[in-house]
Image (cartoon, rainbow, N blue to C red; front, side):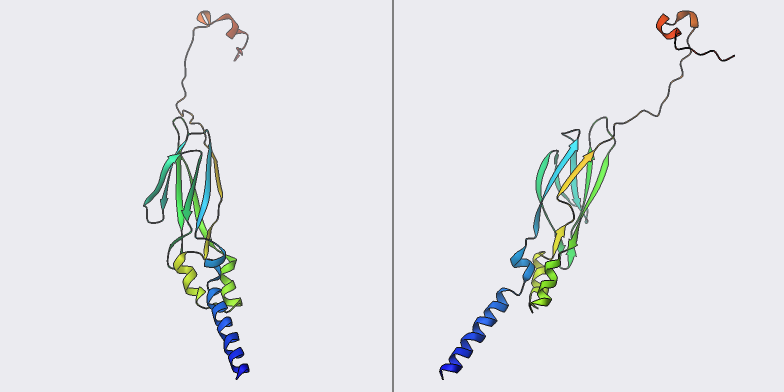
Length: 166
């Protein structure tokens, strides 16, 4: 009788352990990640939209924020970042999710329930970037001017730079 009770306890402990370890990613990792955003020059305005076109953030650099790694059941997130600053060309960056290796831990330890729970919670994904550092390019005018000067009316210091065309 004692042996049957011990076996029942052992089975109960094992079942509890399997249930608790059944969603490996959900237990071991998270579904929101920090993202540090910097730019040169500082103070650039930037916005973040998700893959459905919804704005999820709008602010200035430098910034520290949290982004979800999932956009739904079995769907990794993708974010589009657009930077702008007066006198500089706009710049775009994409931040995407990638599958975590921990998700396959569900298969190795027999956590079949985790194969469903992790996609629901988003814990099966992680963001592909922790930092976004952008260097904005100054705008250059495409309009070039041609000015014609009378050689007798230019400053004397310019004359030493002139080249004869004959």
